[in-house]
Image 1 (cartoon, rainbow, N blue to C red):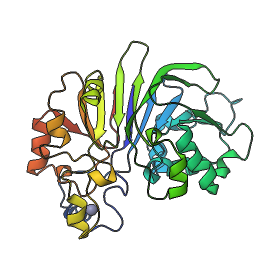
Image 2 (spheres, rainbow, N blue to C red):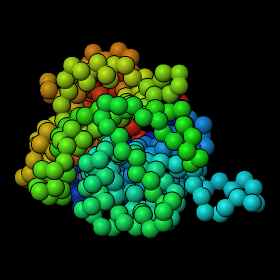
Image 3 (spheres, rainbow, N blue to C red):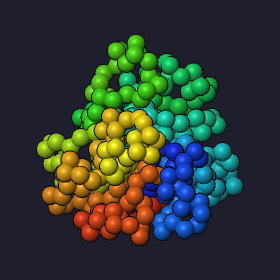
Length: 314
Ligand SMILES: [Zn+2]
């Protein structure tokens, strides 16, 4: 399986349009030791012909253009000019920075979207713009899954791609735009998911962009993965409050911080098997600064910090 990281920042990207935090300011001034990043987006493929997106970021159009593998391939003159190697999208939550990109894929291209019944209802029943994805009968096919149960990802032809996906419940937190009445009808176990993708040879990718807490069961799951892409949104729990002057803690918005005894660096220190990579990094996170002590601390602990454009095989 080939894994491509098309974007590695949290919602807002790096720099963020309305942010003058030390990181964003230094990046704009050209004095930052570190890289700009688009909003988190991962693409995977087993045969390098059918690709699957994990989430659909608001930066998706530019991310596709920056990735030749995802361009329409016209190998023969008889081939249709409107086509795409993107066969499907797996949605792990209904956050805007994870679903807005779907609206950018509205040009009548057949596409399969895998998600939970609850996330599908939020998008299709409460947000009428998503009807643009269902103007033609063969345009978008919704494929519901249940957390805990594995399901195959299908190629365009409807064949098994030989990649299997399984979602695990990480949190019961629905986005703020979901109304209280709708929330009361939804299954809390379908709100915020991690994805495990498995190849036919049993190699596993764990994709966990929003993790509110870590327990023993999750740690065990993560230690069975070969590559772990984990929530690196915030360095500290009060990071947003300090930058904004008010607001919510990292954990209140569904993200365990990287640092502190309760943070992921410490809680996951015992992982032995996976290559460990932080993704979904907020622009305020000091570990983005490669000249800083936080960056050194993370790298010394054996973690990598994802950058746009990375790819690897497993
Ligand atoms: Zn910033």
